[in-house]
Image 1 (cartoon, rainbow, N blue to C red):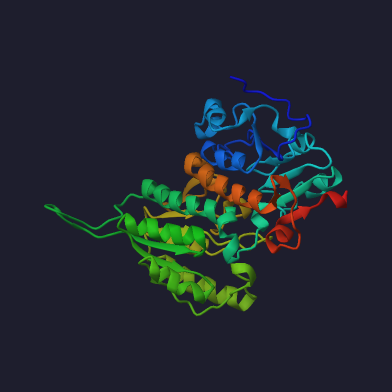
Image 2: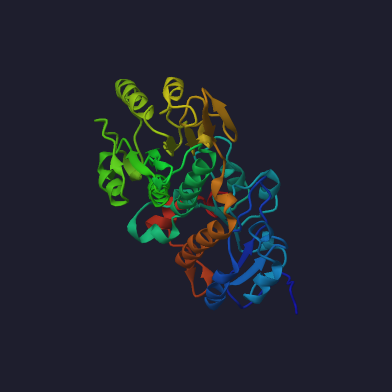
Length: 372
């Protein structure tokens, strides 16, 4: 069977989509999985997969070929799709007129946006896709946050010295663990739902009071501290100094009563807000657990060590980085659907022809070929 192809030749067929092998340490996801490829081929696309691209997600090259892709050089394709932001060496593989789709960290100071612009690459950052109803199927932030929220609870349960569910045994009754989730976006709601399924007594908190009904919809209680910080785009706004002081004291008092605290609070383009103080940690019962999902931007807990699991004041504080990559099978499957939906929005008769009058494409495009 022919498994390689010159992806640089001219062809009457539609655009070529290149799926690269991720090189970042610990990144096991792949941008497209075999089950999504037939639908792309049906639209007239050719899919070129780098050898070993699915290795981290336990997907062999043969599975891609059987789905209709070819194994070859993805970096010369019309559209290159990936997961993690590209490094210097990866940007150097791209050339003028190509399109790149993936997580590009446009708000990070160390991103590659200027390098992509200089190279004449048209780039779409999936984290910049607007959170509007018709773009939900393309929302990679949400799909991956679901994975992170789920896995965070499993990590908390693994680190905990206590059962999550209430148990009634011949030796007596064990009370259920109390779980507090701080930051009730997609990851937080998934964490609440998962903790509830494990039998925990769950409570959610967010500075956006309008999410209280969502918290209750997954069977959790709402922790009301009387602070409203609803912002634009579904994110929280930055709190004032007085609000921060009020929130910090109220949270500090509340946190001490929980067995497990999971934090997911992020403010785009800013360091993660500090919600769990050292004093709050010190006041928690020995054996309690904190899982901080904001470690990549500094952490929500004052004692967090990003990427590490530490014990402070007899409390375990875990701050895993890139949790979705630890569940590469389903994380890749969800991400693949996001990418396929975004690609479909850009296509006209199998050719790449993005309409920048479309809000989704206009907002997610961080550099265009005309800028070069």
